[in-house]
Length: 157
Image (cartoon, rainbow, N blue to C red; front, side):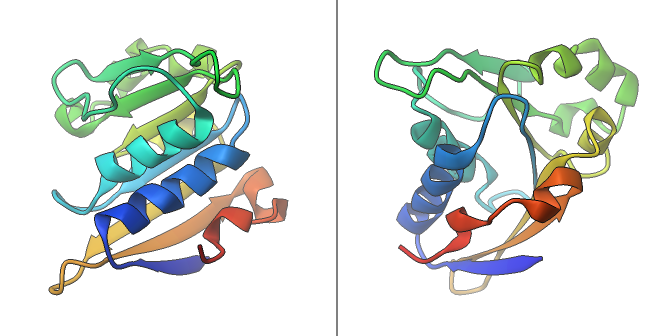
């Protein structure tokens, strides 16, 4: 477990960009934290690091959005999910058929802690908290194969 301080929104995007640059097809990233903690901002950075096309915004009302690789990207699609509206209904999460996406895409699930783990024992959990000074703290908790992966994305700028 590692904690990274993210003083600004740009730092959060940069952290996500570094993570996106090392993610591979089949990787699952679960984002946790209260409203306004920076989950969508981090997902935007991950998308930049992967080099996918399309504007990354919270998929709260559509639940899941797939972003195809941009011509200049790494060739890996991103499936961006917001589990907030599922309200803990794991059957609805199953209905999204995300385990199929895990074969050839990176799957990032906002509000994923407590539900997304059932998709794969190999996942990266990132808990975000917002401090009073508006800086964020990202606590990175590796599970499964992530325990042996080099966490190069947590290194400073």
